[in-house]
Amino acid sequence: MPATATVHTEALGGPVGIGVACQLVVVEGPDVGRAVDLGEAEVIVGTDPGCALVLTDEAVSRRHLGVRADGARFVVRDLDSLNHTLYQGSHLGEATLPAGATLKLGRSFVRLQPRPQLVALPPSQSRRFGELVAESLAMREVFAVLELAAESDVSVLLEGETGVGKELAARAIHDRSARRGRRFVAIDCGALPEGLLESELFGHVRGAFTGASAPRAGAFARADGGTVFLDELDSVPPAVQARLLRVLEQRQVRAVGSDEASPVDLRVVAASRRDLRELVAEGGFRPDLYYRLSVVRATLPPLRERREDLLPIVAELLRHRGMADPGAIEGPNLDRLVVHDWPGNVRELRNAIDRAVALSPGARDFAGLRLGLDVVTAHGELAGVRTDLPFADAKQAVVDAFERRYLRDVFDRCDGNISAAAREADLDRKHLRALLVRHGILPES
Image (cartoon, rainbow, N blue to C red; front, side):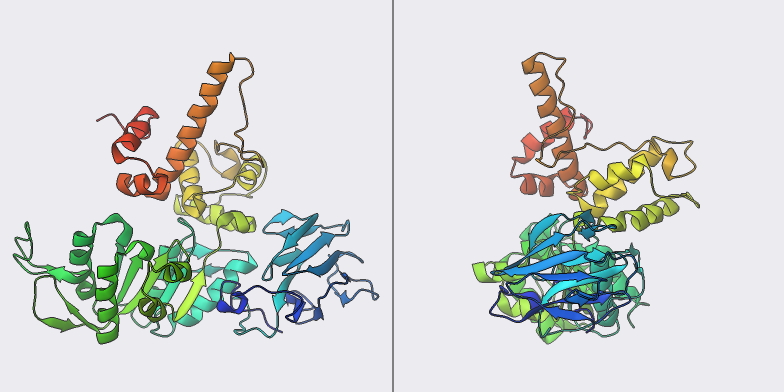
């Protein structure tokens, strides 16, 4: 049985338990397609002929893994295997996992999934989609969906945390489509107040509002024949949602202050940090607009859930920064990257590599970089508490370290936009600016 198109599709949308037929399926490896049904009794996976799911992968132990259903979830335990069981790039001992979880055993990937699947697609054999590079099965499944979507003109909705690469995915969709020779216009809907957002999207005529001294073509008119990318779609106010829907349904755009509508021929790719289905259920997003935009819907997983992608991404980043041969991505520097939680995802990783390159002018390869990261323990505590200081001073040092790390992450994730960072941090804009200056993230001027 082929791999599902993506674990982020509607196929796994509801709770899955013993009442629904579930199975463990080999989705990549020598035994792709083999499967075993799951129930309350534990099933054993390994190369031993007596196992419930027998694999021929030589990197898999004789008795490698045990799996049993527990209500709507699954108890998975590694049976002291030689090469370990990996989940989201980390060694797994015993854990309770949801349907849709993918595990790596040796050179094989297996998935907990209900059957039948609504959508079936094999993972992409490519490790690249535009500027996105990946080794993980989760991202290559996303690549498989986007590769097919790029060949058509359907609207695409990309969901995922800030910094996972949604704009890069949107650009790659455009570059692989028949519209590649026309313009790609990206609009950050979360960075603009409602009035400016309408003008930026739909354009305006002279005199439409105070300060409109000249007409301006909006994003839809500028992208005629090409692609419009609407980022931060979850922050679009209701009035603008209504106008967006009319553009998508009628393929006509009317500038602010104008009585005339002009036809447009374009493709729309949208992106959201939040699950728009939740916003629809809460009444914060129009369901008709959601269904119009989500003809193809894909979620890009966060970097912490696909740490095996660190190697190809770091190598790609270094090559883009002039290091033709970055050498082996391994050693202490890689260890620092692997233990970090990456709240800012690939964007934070890019900033960390940029900082390391800037502070290591003589470095010829990855091992020579001065790579510094704040290390946080599994309990969310900052490592490196100063016990050689008085209590008050040691406490203040930890608070300062926390503030610097938090503010830097939020500021980087928002691409230096103070208003957006203030909204995300739930702080007054002036107070946030004062904190940024205090910690040297912004200059005093």
